[in-house]
Image 1 (cartoon, rainbow, N blue to C red):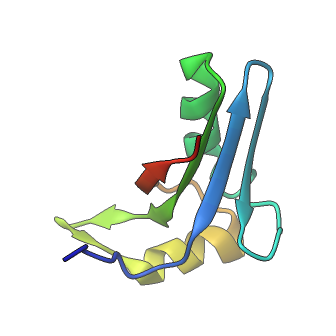
Image 2 (image 1 turned 180 degrees about the vertical axis):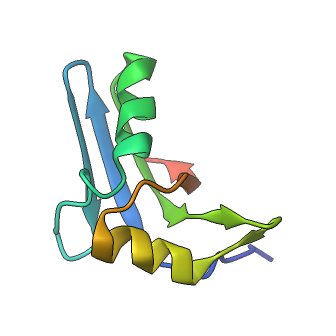
Length: 87
């Protein structure tokens, strides 16, 4: 059984000099998830991750904080739970 965080899917595309995070509908989430994009850029490798952005809060994943982050573009620590790397 696979644990499913309470959120939505996103795809992260990264290569040296370019990083983009998209929702399933193709919308650009890179600015809203800037800490995730920055971390991917610092890897310096090409990769594609299919996963789910989550906001840890008080030892749990907080879906409401994720929506605040996306709606208001507030700075909130965010991580991506990756399902599997995409070849």
